[in-house]
Every structure is written in C-alpha cells, then in structure tokens.
Image 1: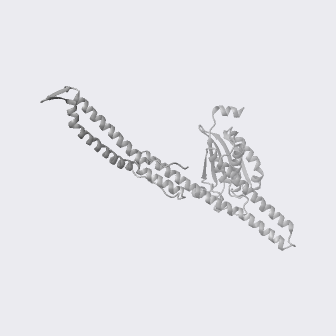
Image 2: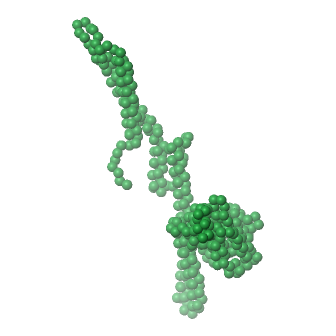
Image 3: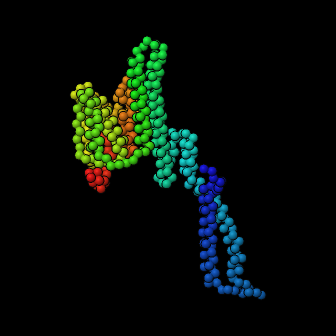
Length: 367
C-alpha cells in the first residue's frame, strides 16, 4: 500500500515529550508569578517617580524565565529523542524481523529479552506465528513433493504399458488394458483424495446436524465385505451422538478410520471396535483395532501424507497414503482433536473428539 511520507513515530514522541515539558514548565512559572504578585502593592515609590511593582518583577525575572523555557525546550527535545529511541528499540527489531519474513526468511526469530510488556508480548506472538508458518510451509512443500512423486508413478507406469503395446503388437491387449485400468483407477483415487484434503483444509463446506453413531453404522456396513475378506470382525456400539459439521466429510472421516483399522490388522481373526459417545463438552468417535505392536513415535507419523506403517506407501498398496491425513484435516476443520495411541497388546486406538452441540440442537436431531 503506497503512502505519502510523514513524520516518524520517534519524532512525534519527541515533539510530544518536549511540548508537554514546555507546557508544564510554563504552567509552573505562571503559578509562581501569580503567588508572588498576589499580595504585592500596585505601585512602589522610587525617588522622583512611581513604578509598578509587577513591571519591576517582570523586568527582573523575565529574561531568566525565557532562559528556563529555552532550556526546557532543548532538554525536552534531546531527552525525548533519547527516551523515544529507547522505548521504540523493540519495535525496530520487530519491524526488521517482519521485513525478513516478507523476503522469505521464516527461520528468523526476534527473541526479545527483558520482562513482559506490550512489545515483548507482540514479539512473542510474532515468533509463535513465524514458527507455525515455517512448519506449515515445510509441511506443504513436503506434501507437494510426495504428491508429485505419487502422481508421477502411475503416469510412468501407464507410459511404459503404452510403449509396450506400441512396440509389441503381439502382446496381449487385454492384459495391457486391465493393468492400465488398475493404474488409472489408482491415479483417480489419489486425485480425489487430494481434492478432498484440500477441501477440508479450506473449510469450504456447509455445516449441518449429524449423528456420528449413524455415520459409524453406515461406514461399517459399507466396509463389511472388506472386513470379511481380511477375516476381521467389526463391533459397533454407541448411543445417539449429535454433532455439527459436514455429513459427507464426517462420513469420509469415519470410513477412512474403519478402513485403516481393517487393512492394518492381524493376518486372521482380527477385531475392530467402533464406538461413539457424548461427553460434557464434546462428542467422541473411537476406532480401535488389533494388529502389530506400534511404537508411539511411529504412531505420531501416521497422520502425515503418504505415510503408512514403517515408511512411504508403495505403488502396489490398495490405498493412496492419505487416509489418516484426511482424517486429521477433517477433524481440525471441524474444530476437533485427533489422538492416536498404540495399544499395549498391538494395534491402534484412534480418538476423534468434536465440540458438543447445544441441548436445543440435540432435541432437533432426535426430532
């Protein structure tokens, strides 16, 4: 934004300090004069003439008063400039840090020393903002790199299959078409997952009254064939669990959690427990499953994009590596909290906690 040049804050404060000091000095001198002249006779006799006493006092003390006022002016300007500079020094550091951040340096921190005051509170808030912004930018760059890698893989496979079909006319066309279909399906799934993740992060959705228990039942019924294929038993329980949000996104959240719990389970005779409940200030959806023993450090990486188990998702895996990342994004978009806790016996315990609705909203949901 273009602005016309103006006086600096330091100069304005200096003039303000000096002006205040001049006014205070003038008022003090005026008060002294009033008290000196209040009880003095109007005239005083001197040989050959009558001279007003006020004139004598003004003539005697007038020059001294002017010198005092001049001294106060110089002292106010010099002292005000020094004091203003000292007071505004933290603001200069904050301004320099802001310019560095504008130029792309997000690693710089102000770290303003001293006791807490308005400037230090501002500096600490700015440092916190820079830290979060740096982490967000790093996460976005990592996500973009991973997404580019994942999208490049099916495209490279498709190109290889097409080249084979073009150079080898005797190759089985049906096999090539089937492989191209599988690769293309994976690319579409990945693209849709990326769009869903972007939609959740932008929070561009309409909020409605939903029942998490119904969403849990719907997700469980949809994924029942997958559970039977993997030999996993699903148990769902919970009363009416009212929440406010996007039904489509919350259903996607629930489906991703249940699907993840089914796929990452024991080779046989695995279990998945889906539970919904109401707390005093929140509603909770929990998905718990059996499986291999997981360390807390490894579990903390599951919500990062394209992370699964011991590392990056591979091309042959049925998923696209965005399931829990989408869950985290949807949870945050609804003002909730996602917690992943390894089970001592193996597997994972996932909790999604969302803000509770009002009693009026619950009555409306039941109706």
